Length: 87
Image (cartoon, rainbow, N blue to C red; front, side, top):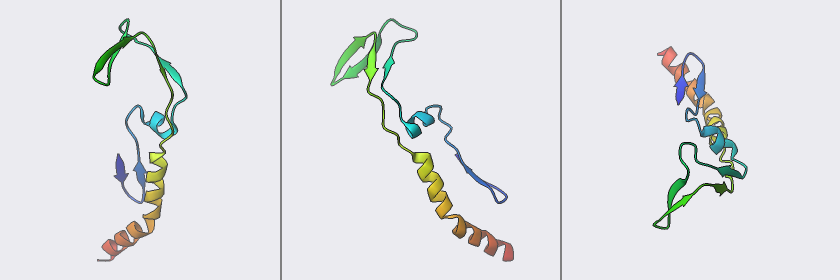
């Protein structure tokens, strides 16, 4: 989500899992919560298992990149707003 207001702007990731994408995860176990087994498809075959050992994920600092991109455009946006105020 991007908001721009009176001299302020914000960029927010509203998805609950955004922090795990941004920072990555350590290896962890996944267990079923409301069932006895996890069920998923692998290479066209259904797999049923009570436990998965997830290897973790690498960080993807998309919020950091978005902030850096926005910071690089501040001068351009300020100039446009200044010209709008003068006309």
